[in-house]
Image (tube, rainbow, N blue to C red; front, side, top):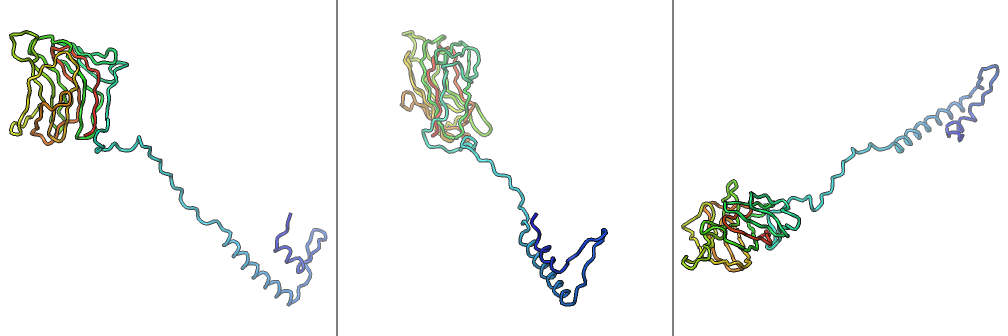
Amino acid sequence: MKKSVFCLALRPLFAYKRSAGLVSFPAINLSQRRALWTFLVAYLIFALAACSAGASPTQPKAVRPRASVTASEQPTPTALPKGTILYQANWSHGLAGWRGTAGWKAVGGQLLANSLSDSSITAPYMPVVPNYAIETRIQIARVLKNVANSFNIFASKAPGKDGYEAGVLALALREPDLPPPGFAQAAPDELNISAGFLQIDYVPGSKWHTYRVEVQGSSIAFYIDGTQVSTTTSLKPALSNGPLGLTSMGLELRVSSFSITAL
């Protein structure tokens, strides 16, 4: 084993011998004594300096690393670029989360309604933005009962927000002596009459049509095949963002698409 500097330095000053288990030390004169003390003081100073320099600094407290946040964990924004698709229905494997009363089912990738009484179905999504559009493609395959019928795109009331309906009602059976069948309109639950109200006569026939609702603040606009047919305003400061869905009464409907986009 390598000897320490201290032991090697003292070797000339302390020559000892063992005899019968005892250790004897030779006499040390004054000059040797002074040299020894000088060495010891120098060694102690050197040792203290070495210990101070070599001592490990106090370790800082361990800091727990922050977990990284992925894009999917970011809070959902309440303002999105206009036209951003928020939701698109897919009924190719059934109702896919849509919840409805009797008379609604999914067949061949389409949503079907067939009920004499008022029935409804609710989408499994609510938009996160206050201004949005709902667009759906619907065919009225058959009128089941005269006049007392309708279909609507709807939003249920929510705290501080008004509900609404937009669609077609009072479709007449195909009889020549009846007046022009049906009306198309959009109306909030708490209609602001002073802001005006637009409703049109409407004959959908058995063709497919695209129905679109645009909600912005307290105003609602209703479009059929790209043409605005109705617009009005609620007494409440904002319209509801859901639950959203469809209602049908006295009609046989086929629905091929339903999407929600940001405005």
